[in-house]
Length: 67
Image (tube, rainbow, N blue to C red; front, side):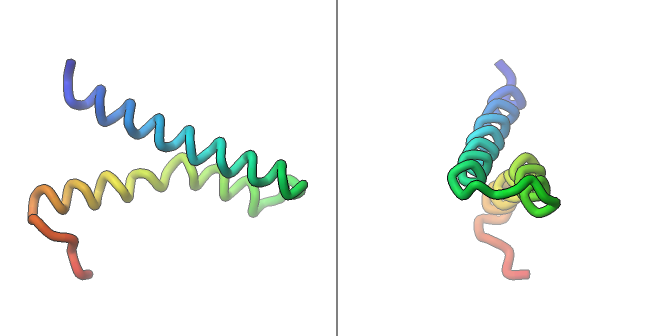
């Protein structure tokens, strides 16, 4: 099994978990389906990329970049 399968599966699990939590939060708050709610759900799919970027930087440089 390739390491890409592991990375892809981890990404999908993280994105689906965040998507479900955001959706359930909107249901609990009885929030209307407006631009902000849709944008929040879309962002849940893409923001785990930041986690993988930081992990890559930590592994390659040994520390978190300061900017």
